[in-house]
Each structure stands twice: as C-alpha cells, then as structure tokens.
Length: 397
Image 1 (cartoon, rainbow, N blue to C red):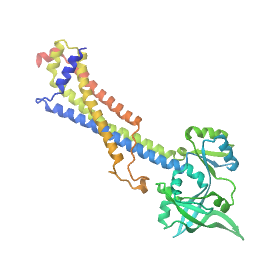
Image 2 (cartoon, helix red, strand yellow):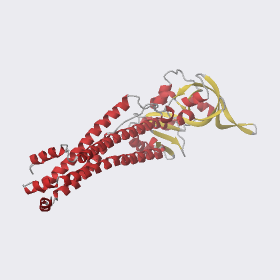
Image 3 (cartoon, one colour):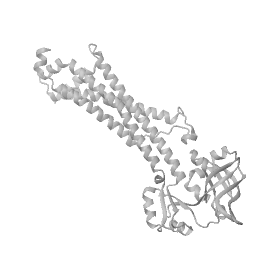
Image 4 (cartoon, rainbow, N blue to C red):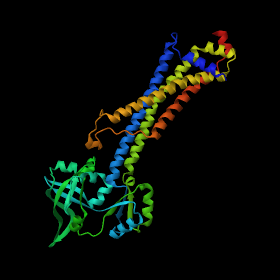
C-alpha cells in the first residue's frame, strides 16, 4: 500500500470544497458532537465519582470500617485485649450503644454511643475535630451533632436532662433512667441523619448509668477492611457478630453504582449520535467523489488504499473530537475543582463545594468507548467506497 498516496488524498479531501459545503458542515457537527460528548462524560463521571467518594468517606467514618458487636455472646474487655494482642496494628474503640431523649425545648430522641474519647478520636476524624477545643471530658459529658445542637438551642457546657430507654424498678412499677449531663459541644459530620440523631458520651459515665460492664461492640480501623474482616472473623468466638461499613450501606452503594452506569450509557448516546454524522458525511463525500474514486482505481490504486483513505478521514475527525473533548473536559474539571462556581447546600449533600474525582478507569472507558464508536462509524463508508463499480461509474458519470 502506498502511504504517501493515501495521505495526499486524505489531505486533499479534508480541504473545504465550495461545491459541496454541506459535507464539511456535517464533518464539523460530527467533530463538535464527539467533543461535547467526551467532555460531558468526563465532567459527569467526575462529579459522580466525587459524590460517591464523599458519601463513602462520611459513611465509613460514622459507620466505621469494621464493627464487632454483641450478638449471642457479649463483647467484653477480655475480647478487646485479645484482639489488640492478635492485631496490634489495628485501632480499636469499644462502645456502648443505647437510645435516649434529651429534654430541652421538648423531647428529642438520639442514639447514644458511650466511647473512650481518646480512642475514638484516633479512628473518627469527625470526633477528633470536635474535641480540638474541648479539654478534660468528664464522666457525664456529652457531644451532640451540630444540627441537633442548633435546632434545640443548646450552648457549650449547658446541663440538660437525658432520659434513657433502660428502665429501673421503682416500688410496684418501673421508671426510665434519668441523668443530668453536660453538653460540652458538637460534632459536624455533614450528614443530617447523623448530626441530628447521634450523641457521644463518656463510656465510663454510661457504664455507671446503665450499670453495664460489657460493651455493645468494638469499632475497628484497619488499613484494608475488605480483607481484614475475614482475618478477624476467624478468631472471634462463636456468637459474636462482625460487619463492615460497606455491608451496612449495601443498598445505597448498589443504587449509586447503577445510577453511574445508567448515566454513562445515556451520555455515550451523544457520541453515538455524533458518529452518525461521520457516517453521513463520508457517504455524501463518497457519492460526490465517485468519479475520482473510479479514476484512482483505474489508474492503479488498490481497493485497500481507497478503503484506507475514507477510514482515515473518519478516524481523523473522530480522534480530533475525542482529543479536543478530553482537553475541554479536563479544563472543565479543573475549573469546577478550584473555583466555587457551583455551591451545594451542605446540610443536604454534606459538602458545600462540588466534589469531582475522575478515576483513571472511567477516563479510559470514555476514551476507548468513544474510539470504538468512531472506528465502527468509519468502517462502513470505507468499505462502501472500496466497492465502487469502476466501469459503470466512468461510463455513466
């Protein structure tokens, strides 16, 4: 195959032809369509990834990477020491869980976690941030979520009545446990459900209030929870439960994954529609250049060379669109990442800035997918051009 000949004809056909301007307008529309499709896909997938990771980050902290909990068998200090000895590189935070009501401007229900704040802050950056300005946590000190703190008008070091769900016998009846506690401050997870419905209390104080000497469970931080959960499960005594953060929110992340796939397929349709312009443009060019094609074949050009000419034409338009779209998408992602063009309500999404994180896998899928669509769109017209009937064309045209 004569590459110089193919390249010469390709360059000639890429020049604007005043006799057939609609062909070049169609080429331009195909280029712009592919450019728009690739750029839109990159930005959309970047936003989806960014939101997924932001939600994952919040849920991972508030639900913890791995949780060992009391089921048929209670979790106690002996089990905690055993786990610390077996896996010294992991971080542990034992907790007691109960429900309670805070009596202030009405009754406000919360889920209370009794924790060792020094251990908890090592695995929970939300609590660590909340404790930066708080010193000397007392036995009956409590930290609540920011939304609850503001909604019911609490202020730092205010004392309130907390009514616990556990009952205590009084005479011939029972009464809920009540205790005056001090609200030391608030944490801010960025998720309303947690900031309004969870409170943290000193575990020593909660043990005294509930008269409980065992844990509800142990929160565990590990470098690789997906693998480490199996290691921990093997050494746990029968009857003790264990769960990972991804198992607690399986339906939520499955829905996000499905939404991401659907968005990818829908936006890929933009590139498919744009590729139809490549097909129509090449077919129009083939019809307008039939005499030239027939003449080239009669003068010695092979059908493979003809095929290569039109395949290359389609690929040049498509690849230029893909590259330009990738550059435009990259610029768009950079601008959205570094400038507050779009602001989000933090109480709804957990972040005020639009999170964007385009993964290498998604970027590769977009580029490869667009390239395959462009290639397929260029193949049919190229084959059609190579099958031009030389005798009929020269005789009648």
